[in-house]
Length: 298
Image 1 (tube, rainbow, N blue to C red):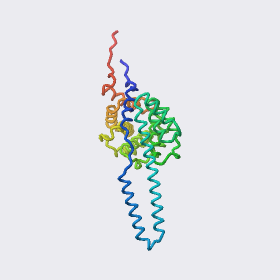
Image 2: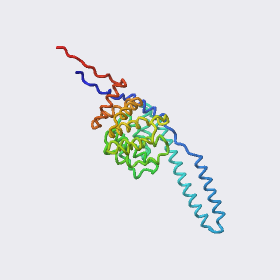
Image 3: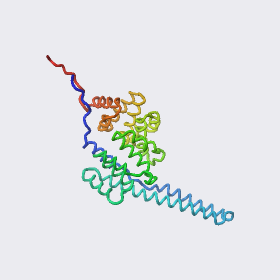
Image 4: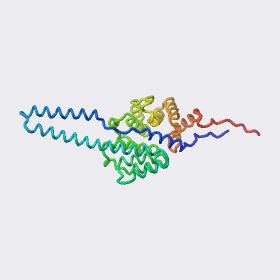
C-alpha cells in the first residue's frame, strides 16, 4: 500500500506575495467631512436655540452650549489626530511588499515610542515570516492602556495570532471581548467576526459562532480580503456542529481563496476531522497527488 501524502507545505513566497498584495490594498482612513458638517450645523442650531431661550435660562444656556461645544471639538480633534496617525501607518505598511520594504517598515515602526497602533502594524509585518515573533509583539500591548478606538483591533489581532499559533485557549479571552458593533468599516467588522467566531467554535460554543457568521456574506466581493478568515471560522464551526457537508464546502472555498491556509489545519492539536478535510480537499483541488494503490509482486 502506498503511503498517504499530506498536503504540500505552504509556499512561503506565495504567502508573502498574498500578504504584500493585501497590504497594497489597504485603504487610507479618511476624515468624514459630511459628518463634520452635520455636527457643525447641529452645534450652530444649539447656539441659536440657547440664544432664543436666554430670557428664561440666562447665562446658563450659553454655559451648557459652550461645554457641549468644547466636548465635541475635543472629541473631533482626537479623532482627527488618530485618523492622521492611522494614515501614516498605512503608508508604512503599503511599502512592506518585499524583504527590503519589510525591513524598512519595521525600522520605522520600531523607532521612537512603541504605542499600540505601531505594534499592531509591526505584528502584521512580522506575521508574514515569524508568527511567534508577531504574537510576542501583540502580547506586549497593555490593552487597558491602549486608546479606546484601537482596543478592539488589539483584541482581534491578538486572538488571531493565538489562533494561527494554535493556542486556542489563550485566544478565547481577547476574542470574547471584541465588540462587533464598534467596527467602523465592513471589512474590519468581518475580520472581528471571523476571529471571534473561530475562537468560539474552537472553545466549545459553535452555536454562537454560527450566529455571528450568519451576519456575513462570503460571496460579497467587497469582503474578498477577509474571505480566508471567514472560511476558516466556517470550517471549525460546521465541524463542531457536525455539519460535515458545510464544513467540506467551506474548506474547498478556503482552498480556492488561499491554498496556503490549508496547512494551518495540519498542526498538532487541530481537530482530526479538520485535518482529514484539509487533506481531502487538497487532493481534490489538485494541490497534491492522490494516493495510488501499489501491488507488490512476490
